[in-house]
Amino acid sequence: MNAFATGQIFGKAIWSGHQQGKLGPIPQREGSASRISADDDNTRFANIVLPHLDDAYTLAVWLTDNPVDAEDVVQDACLHAFRAIKSFAGRNARAWILTIVRYRAHMWLRKNRPAALVMVGDTEAIEPAPSAAGDARIETPEAALIAKTDLARLEAAIAALPSPFLETVVLREIQGLNYHEIAEVSEVPIGTVMSRLARGRRHLIAAIRRTD
Image (cartoon, rainbow, N blue to C red; front, side, top):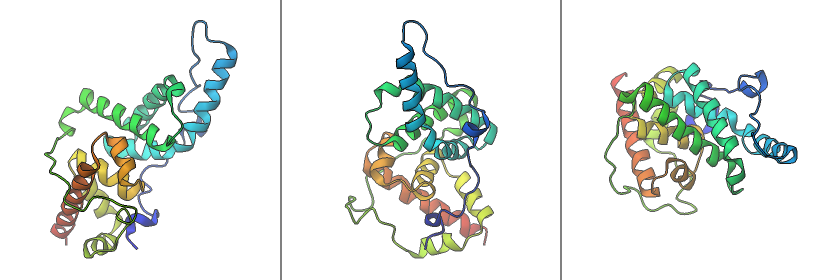
């Protein structure tokens, strides 16, 4: 099995801020909002956002390449999620919070580390259009090579990817999102997701072979 898919690697980011109080108290709305409304917002936030904080932190760590900066990004994302909690339509909470984390991470990077946001040209999808079966993981020689690569080399290779490839590889291979979910989080067409994923994997393979 592909090492990515086992979920046993990449212990690089485990978020426990909500258990240790790092996020601080959930903000209360000001003005005329009723106590009942505030309590309802708190409940929705707890049910919708808190279960996905580990995933949020994992993505933030990969995007910022710094655990402390990632905590800042997640806290900022949680504040924005709380303020927008009434707008959540109830479809995919995980994709919704990861979309916010990605956006806030990009905003943080533009302000603090703009050189990290290296844009790449996207081609049309270079794989067949996804179907129910087409989104499954298929063992390939490339996947076998990745599976045999030690964790440190693999993490270094992923961290060196250009940002659009990095976030797509992380969302797909580490966090297990399907093409539709990645397209929602990244706000790009599915064809672009597939193109970035294929190109990101090629970059990974080339980087791994260079260190053999």
